[in-house]
Every structure is written in C-alpha cells, then in structure tokens.
Length: 235
Image (cartoon, rainbow, N blue to C red):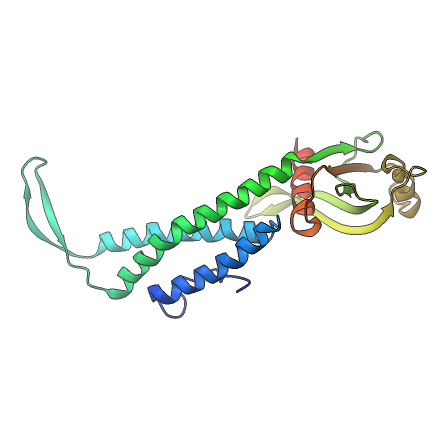
C-alpha cells in the first residue's frame, strides 16, 4: 500500500479491524523506505496524517461531549452534577478505538523520520561557489553526493507570493544538468560552465550542498537541500 488517503479514517467502512489493516499496511511501506534512508514524500505525508488525526481526535471528543447525558448524582465535594454518558453509537466508539490505536504508531514512525532528517541535515555542508551577488532571488544550486564523480545542477527562483491575503515566500526549483568532477575541473570551477550555458544570468548566486554521508538523492538529499536553501535565502 503506497499511500494513505487524507480521509482514510472516516471514508468507506468505519471498522476498527479494517482500519488497523489499512494503517499497518501503509506504515509497513513507510518503514521500508525509511530503512533505505528515503525520507520524502513519506515524512511529509506522515506529518499531515498525524495533524489530521489529532484534529479528528479533538473533534471526536467535542462531539462526544455534545451528546445529551443523564444526571446520575451530585458530587458534594465539588458541588457539581455527575453525568451518565448515554452514547451508544457504535461508529463513534470504533472511531475512538481507531484513533487510540493509530496515534502512537504514527508518533513512533514520525520519530524515525525525524531521526533520518536530523542525520541528513547534519551531514549536508552548505557552501557557495564564488562570490554571492546582492541579487539572490534567482540562481543555481549544486548537489554534490557523497564520494561522487558527478554533481547535479538545479536552478531556483525565490519570490514572494500572496496566499490567503498574506505574503509568503515561494521557492521553485528545476533540474538543469550534471557535470563530471575531476582534478582538472573541481566543483568550484563549474560556475563558469553554468554561466556559459545560461548567459541570461551573467553573475548568478551558486550554492553548493555537499553530502558527507550516503543519502538517496531524490528522496532525501534534494528535498533537504531545498529546505537549507530556503533557510539561507530567508535569513
């Protein structure tokens, strides 16, 4: 099971045994990727699923509290009524059971993902090739995998966008080309090649992200490099 629907808990049959099977199948797939140090897109999806689960948990508690309850006595210590919960809805009880079962499993897998993220971020060195110009809203970044003979060049465009009447930053990236590194052409010399191939930016900002550990390129190295680039541009 490759993905998990955003509304996996509430859609179709609300049955504890069935939902347990759905979740465990999904998490088994995520764990297989994490064992290979492949972080994305699973890590981002896990975060979204966990946030949705907590929101559903809070809404379920609010729904449960909104049901009519019978007064069964008075607590004279607190001078308050003691209510008898008369909820008998089987679907609501199944929903609560699914949430209680799912929450610790999602938390556990999220921690594994965070460990991979922290390890990768600590093993990616951020540099720049040449002098950084004042204009940095458009440029390039280079991925230099661990002990690799090839590096991969991407362009980026950093701009403000309006989202829900608020200004936020957007970072768009796309692959450009790859270069072979040698003694005659070390990585700090490829900026000239980039300029020659892309003359519309005569003096671009070129960031270098070098990994000093084995990291899957597309699933881990690239997305974390983008986050590091975003952090550099916003600070």
